[in-house]
Image 1 (cartoon, rainbow, N blue to C red):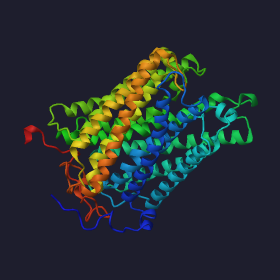
Image 2 (image 1 turned 180 degrees about the horizontal axis):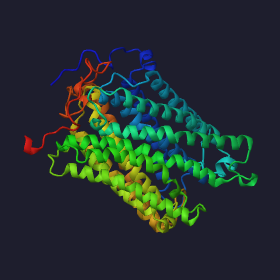
Image 3 (image 1 turned 120 degrees about the horizontal axis):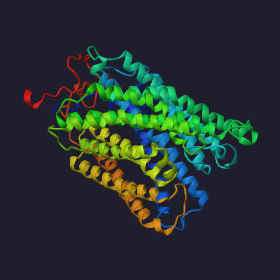
Image 4 (image 1 turned 180 degrees about the vertical axis):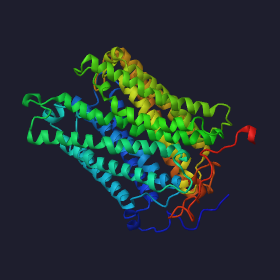
Length: 533
């Protein structure tokens, strides 16, 4: 096993200044890791209070106004400051240049500026929370957010507005890096599928995020100046806000899930010891999802007064976007077929992702169906579907990626038994939390209510019990990964015996990644088949 290199990006300089002014993509990835971990626990604290409130039907823990703030701030923090940036900003920042055989991203200083913008936006949002919070939900629907709410809407949307620039700059950086800094021989059809997913994600970040920025700026202007863009009393149109918001926010779902798909596409062939089945289909499916994601925002507005024909078109397009997603699930399954599967921790998370994402995707087809959507609109069915995709899918992939690349990032192995145990606990806790919500929603329990009829209590108690198991599961990796930093055995250069350029350098990598620029001569995921061994 390789020894840890004497000098690497972690110990090249220990000063605080060297970290806060670094332009090394690996250190910036670690800085993002610290930031979003903080926001994850802030958002998780609000979720805990929401589930405690829903343990009893009477709504006796907090007042309705406080409950509105709790679920609003949970959604705002989790969506804008954890789910959207997590995989691209942490794993993408750290791994993209390594996977391309490059020394850094194309614009290292811009990369550092992106981290500062993200934290500036986060601090503004936290300022709004500490000042009393916001009660509009994470969707900021008008005219409530623009006229009626007496909470800190302007400060919150300003925080998201600033953080949006971080997302745009990161996307630009990734696109240019992928085009310009690939190692010799690393053609487009030899790129790792994680790189393809980051590329597709970056296109969405660059093209869609400005629309959200403009929309939230208009909400702020409306509140401060009363210009009547969304206020019907002044001739404005509140439905216009929904068009603009969902034009960004539905593609944003793919900003969250596409990188997760990329992580799973890296893990599955390694722990199956098989070449990826249908590489080109999966690569282009990422681009297809990115393009189709721009065309389906109207399925969020089936009951917002949209015309029947408009609803039918958006319904059809929503079914179409399921096709490239199904291609990916099929190809992961085909890659597993007859593979030499080993169940290390990253693989358990990847399998969990495939199962939970499939359930979330299939229930998305229910919501894309006009008649069914009218029945379950704004119920807990939508909550369950959304969390199966975003939490069951994206967070499982994020944790899978963290465990897969942790030896490369730190040079240390984590305790494998604890890793597997945590993955199983999270899978059980997640399903116990959110599967009952499908039944609650179908039975008619609306979301955003702090009190409910007694007939819904059993399922709500199951959901809250699952949330406590899930919280314990999320805490475990934090503990043993921190333990591994000091006591974990050395990982060596390539502990998984994986292909890919990131495994050709030391663990942890030196400051400039590679002693010599690597040359690629083989197709991706070059694992010999059983017949060839």
